[in-house]
Length: 310
Image (cartoon, rainbow, N blue to C red; front, side, top):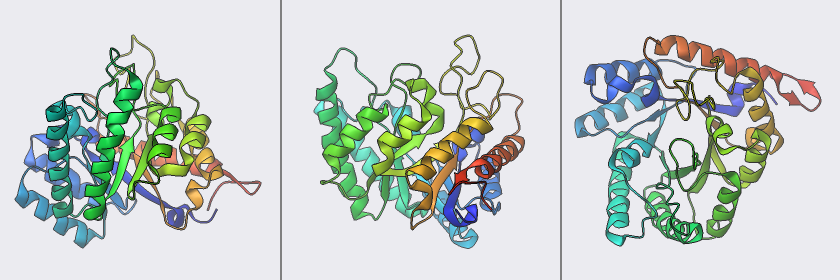
């Protein structure tokens, strides 16, 4: 493996690091610009931008900074309680129409990718029936994304710990994508390292099961200790005392991604850093720590019998 900058397109997930930017325009502008001005990153992953003028300004900033963007629709889905596999046709189509509308906003904002998640798991309903409805909806969303020249990433989430989504474990992901791969054009999977322990999987199994359909990955941390304040899908910094991931686990993730060919694609492989800022934590320090964790992990990857990357 050559220089990692030639192999990886590194991004940062903006909303979790600057939660107050959702309601504070000045904080949003300052934080977005701080990412765009950082040459370490080639992509920013941004929550939906409600104001049209700000979308157009963001698009201009991307162009000037030579930056790419992913429009994250997870906040939209969570915030409105959308259920993409609802048995209620009206409820499901409300979600579809709003997501497609948000795709138009993504294009206006200059984004070339959008990311979605499934609806909540309904334990009282048959899982296969829910998956069938999710498949139908994903076909619609894939068509809409393809028409807008957007890549559509479907993220794996925990199914019974915190967010409790229907779609999460890697075996289910492989099954669903196997059903859809001949009918979709721009649909791929987003695998997040932070969700692996919450799904009670191994890093290697998750990567192997999803390798054929990987479109983007996130590195992040989580805590599985119930008495910890950041238990669940809270994305603490790497090395958090009650967390699951630090350099060793990020190395395993990257090694697995290399071994299945994700890090040796003809195009740059997308890798996003996702951290959520807690009270009294500074985003700048969290980002610096994450960069160091990633660089150390990259140096530990074994390539053709040799350790490390240049």
